[in-house]
Length: 239
Image 1 (spheres, rainbow, N blue to C red):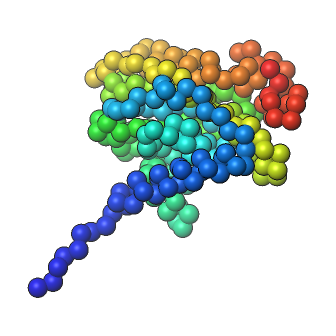
Image 2: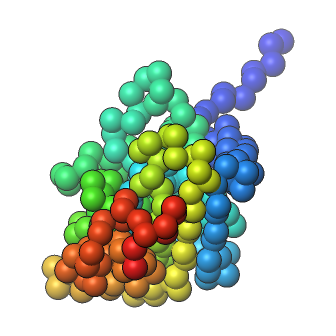
Image 3: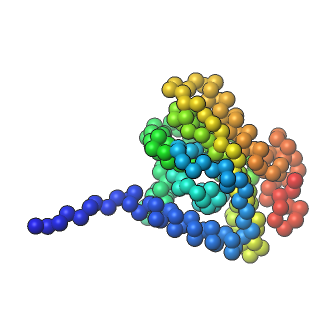
């Protein structure tokens, strides 16, 4: 009689791979850059949660995840990242694909399922990396998911990672920060209206913006002067 071995799935390897990468990254950040995390006490320890942040570099998801640290984040990532062979990495890390700038019902349902099961969803509401370093306009998808599930939204702000576009900057030990704000509590709505989605989108934008230094907020929100890549000193954005 042959013994049937359990069928292995991607999900079997995701948690150990995620936590191994996260703790290795935290160690590397302490060694290679000047890394600071603020507000980790604001991270709820249980229940569905949406982590949102500004977006400066492809390295932002693992860096924000290392900053949050206490909970495993399932990131919604652009579908282009899931092409083989390199697409194995985001799958092992627990990310799932989304077709950006269109109504991707499958990604929306996956996101809602994660939250209803008490998991943590990670999103960049700007939809893409900022080319200037300034915080941009948000898409309404994050607010819609939050309203449909009633999951709180945890605003975060990452700074300094835009410098990774030039890997040689690591020789200067640049300063990276992850700032975590207080959760935005959301009441579940079965059929959110356009006004409700718009109002929550603006609340999320203001919460992220308030965590950013002035030099990252954009020319119309107090970030006058230089762009984040220009500095007064070796590492600090001009404020």
